[in-house]
Structures are given as C-alpha cells and as structure tokens.
Image 1: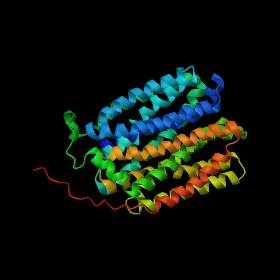
Image 2: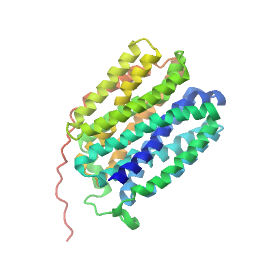
Image 3: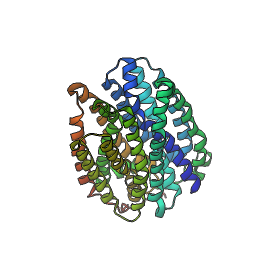
Image 4: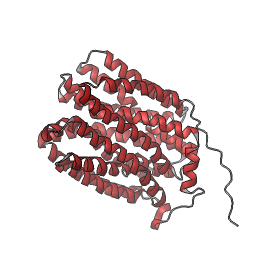
Length: 397
C-alpha cells in the first residue's frame, strides 16, 4: 500500500503541479506572439476537452492492461507537448501541442489512471482516505510547482522554462514502475463479471451517475476558469504578478488539507453531502471575493478558502463511483465522469477568454461560476451511494 500511494502521489504531484501553472504563461505567450487571450484560452480549452476525451480510453486500457503502460505513454506525450508548446509558431500548432498532446498526456498521468490502481490495491475501508492522499499530493504539486514555474519564467524566459519542464515530467516513467499490478502480469487482464459495454450501460442508466457527472461539470468550469484567468484578472486590476503566483500557490497549499480532509470525511459521512457543501462553499467564496475590496490580502484569503474547496471534490466523487459500481471498471467510469469535468473546463477557460475579449471584463463568467456552484450543490444531494443491485449474470453451459 505504501509503495502504491507514494508513487501514485509523486506522479500526480508532477502531472497536476505543472498544469496548474499554465495560467502564468497566458500573458508572456500572448504578448510575445501577438495573439489574443482567446487564442491562448482556446488552446487550454482544447487541452481540457482532449484530457477528458482521451481519459475515457486511457481508463479502458488501464483497466484492461494495467496502469504501467498508460503512464509510460503519458509521460512521453507530456514531454513532447511541453516542448511543442514552447516552439509553436502559429495558433494552430499551439493548439495542437498545448491542447491535444498535453491533454492526451494528462489523461494517462492523472487521477483516473492512478485512482484505478488505488481502488484495486487499497482496502475499501481505506479507499476514500487513500484517494484523499493522492489528491492532496496533486495539490502539493501545485503549491510546489507554481512558484517554481514563475521563477523559471522570470529567470530563463517562457520558452526555456517550458523545455525544462518537458525534461522534468519524464520522471513519471520510472515512478510508474511502482504502480505495476500483479493481476496484469504478462499483459493478461483479471477476470471480470461485466464486459465494458455492460458496465457502461449500467452506469449511464443509473441516475446517480448522471448527477455526479453534472456536478463534476461545474467543478471543471470553476477551477479551470480561476486557475487560468485569475492571474490576468488580478493584473488587470493593478496587482503585481507576484500576487497571482502566491495566490495560485496558496490554492495548492490549502488544497493539500482540503482534499485530505474530504477523503477522510468520506469514510464516515455521506459523500453526497460533502460534495454539496463544497460546491455551495465555492459559490459563497466567489460572491464574497467579488463584493469585497480587491487587495493582496483579500486575494490571499480567497485563495486559501478556494484551496480548501479546490480539488476536494475528487476523492468523494471517485470513491462514490467505486462504492456504487465496484472497482473492476473504475478507471473507465472515472474517465467518463472526468470527461464531464473537462467539458466544464473547456467552457470555463474558453468563455473566460471569449467574454473578456468581447466585453473587456471577466464579470459575467464570475457570475456564471456562482450560479453553477449552487446548481451543483443541489444536484449532488439526491445521489444514492449504496452499491448497485445487480441481477446474477447467466452462467455458461
């Protein structure tokens, strides 16, 4: 268990830590290339939708052949995508590398794949807690990597900083060795009572699965809009770039505690209620942030509160999926729910850039994020967490 958690946590630290700093590149890239913010935002939006789309297939492959091969492929794609992001000369190649390549890489190196291993290897009594540990590692990665990325940009320039990160992300490959699963030795898949098609039909016909997908859409919209556009929002308001770097780092730091607490509480409390409180808390935090005078102190308070709520949805959502449907197809089902998250991410980051370019302000998107938070709190309350009742599978003659 220790090896699985340690290696999984370090992989998520690298993969998620790097992506959380992409907002720091918005202004350097657009100013150097003469592009609009919508161009950058669209590439990040493509990245999020590609992450969700390829995440479904990465989950299927991980469930069938084990996570090790998926992680290796993801590490290589991540390195190539970061290098391509640095060298892209046109909006099309920028969208292809920053969007498609990095999105596919994240599909194979983040939560859906790592949580599949945790779900299969960790005792159910500790599963939600273990997922909280892995999510906390991703948050620590944000706290660790965002200031590092800011330092690299200021010290080396934005292009060289990306090339350095392209080398760093290849460390995922040796860490993946620690997530080899005995049941997948020699490429053979363990026996399952359901086929992929049966598992998908069962999940998509189950209302609670649909409600979890709806809530996760909102999660993606909120966190990616804030993560990508808040640095520019703060600079537009006259605050220094260092305030934005510290704000993103605080989100990562406090999310270490938020995700761990959410995972631990998921062992004792109804996960649907935990999710409802998280989403409602986000709506309230954004409302107060917009209402209060904007100062470095108010930014840091908002970032700390949002950090507690940032990725704390991840452990209870994935643990609920495992609790309802079991772990045989957990990476795949988690991938489908995460795809909904990434559709929300696409909308949040793209609308942020589009509406800013059209109106000169982020206000409309902030208000949408508040309304969606209330909506997500409501739709999570009816979720049924009990294991699904299945009819016995017919036996072969």
